[in-house]
Length: 143
Image (cartoon, rainbow, N blue to C red; front, side, top):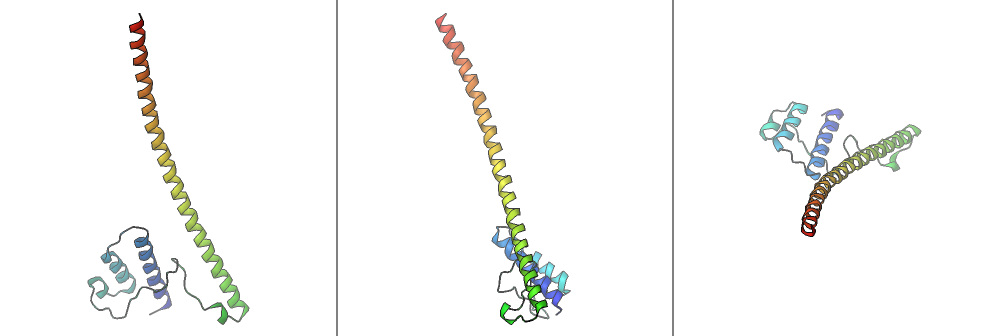
């Protein structure tokens, strides 16, 4: 199996793990169709034994990250530069995800505040009407 195919399968598995961990439910048939589309293996869609083993990775790497050799086994400056680039890309990707989540939470908070404002405006309008009614009743009784 080519390296590209392994990377794609790893991304699919990571995406499925992310969606399941974030509460989004995906049907197994959807994942199987994706695997079938990528691998061309029709048995993956039916659940039969595939021609080669498809496994989800045991590590939970973020989507798009491929495992590299351990830092202790790197020797050349090119490998060190590649490792530094990989770490930078991983950090940037994590930062993008954190920023995206922050923006989502901010939007949710603003929606909550807007709905609270709407409820309080309605309540305020009712109280003003009640006050006017009580003022009318009070002024009619004193007359």
